[in-house]
Amino acid sequence: MTDFAERARAATAAMRDVFPPTPCQRNDYLSDRFGADIWLKREDLTPVRSYKLRGAFNAMRKLGGVRVACASAGNHAQGVAWMCRHLGVDGVIFMPVTTPGQKIDKTRLFGGDRVEIRLVGDFFDDTLAAAKAFCAEDGAHFLSPFDDDDVIEGQAAVAVEMIEQMDVLPDLIVSPVGGGGLTAGMLSYLRAVGRGLETVPEMRLVEPRGGASLTAALAAGHPVTLDRLDNFVDGAAVARIGDRTFAHLSQVPERHVLRVPENRLCITIQELLNTEGIVLEPAGALSVDALRDLGPEIEGRRVVCVTTGGNFDFERLPDVKERAMRFAGTKKYYVLRMPQRPGALRDFLDILGPRDDIARFEYLKKSARNFGTVLIGIETDTPAAFERLEGEMEAIGFVWRDLSEDPMLGELVI
Image (cartoon, rainbow, N blue to C red):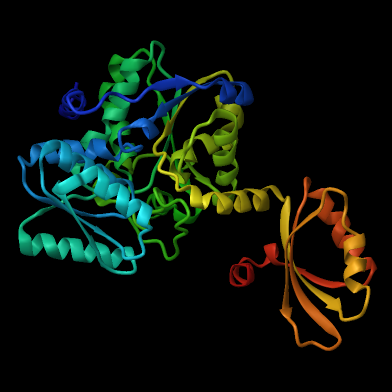
């Protein structure tokens, strides 16, 4: 066994004095659906509902009580805060001014009087710069959310626990990747102990399509900064993968990295909530959603999906539903040019089917004399209903534009 594996096991053993292992559970619903033996490693069930406290614990226990600081608006902040309180360490947590109050309050609750929260900057880069400047001036230790050797080592505990918990090891492990701390730790541990296992699990790594920093780094041969970033999957959308983490992941075949569309991910979040009662944040659901892409590769095989976090703000639920319906093709928005004559609106209503529902209706240009421009949102039960509706609109001479075909315009109008 390598030094890394020994250190990861030591870190895992030390965690037992602070919090219990998370369960690894077979999921019958997913197993039946995908024709495989699907298990969930429930990192959403840690005391802070994410795996982030593992790396924070391992790094902080080695610092010997040194004051720490971090920059985060999410799970890393909560993990650090929780560990500050339980290890008796003082911490300063920098968060963007735009951070939702619920996340600030939760971080403060976890940290108690051991944590000071400072709101700095409208954007995360400003917050990060402020945290690092504070550490340079104050002498505090800056604790990275992923690009830290001790954090990587602590996150490897997920793999240590999983191997200890399963009588028969999986053929495949599916895990989200953002900055790379979790996957670097797990993959490094599996490589280290692989020769001593009857089955050496393979890994598939999953990124949000709008934040595929590992894919970009593998293509370039080194970490690169993405030009654009979709922050919807806020727990995994990272513009640049860490240098230390990429050193562990640089040999991963590009075909083993999956990229999940954000709107499809919303369907998975809804399904797990409605059918299993499992509450997952977008990053936490990435590994489960990726099962759709693995298809025949997993049939008849044992698969573990790491559900990395369950810090879901239910105020986001309407947005999740909206995105899910638009991906499924059961909701569309149109800009409709409607004649300004008596009966024009009735003509439109008459072509709606029995399962079509108007979710939004708004005049965009109210001063037009001959035609009025209307924003209209339609929900239905099947994508085919829109083919019929669009044919009917053309037949009666309505001019329309589907906003789903123009995402930029859709963002501006909707």
